[in-house]
Length: 78
Image (tube, rainbow, N blue to C red; front, top):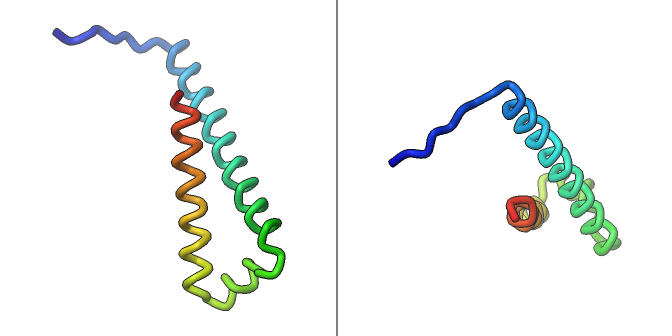
């Protein structure tokens, strides 16, 4: 009924390495996506607007990061 699963040190190490690798890759690509957004909107100083407390810019950046994260998760998962 249930598949048997044995956890070995080798499989645990491989899994942790893969999680760290893909996590780092995902964070790096999120940062790259944010920088591309700043590059394609040269008239909007995102950092300055966020420091000023602009809710509209914060929501836009949050939406951008969530959209990129969904795409990356689907790409990494396969």
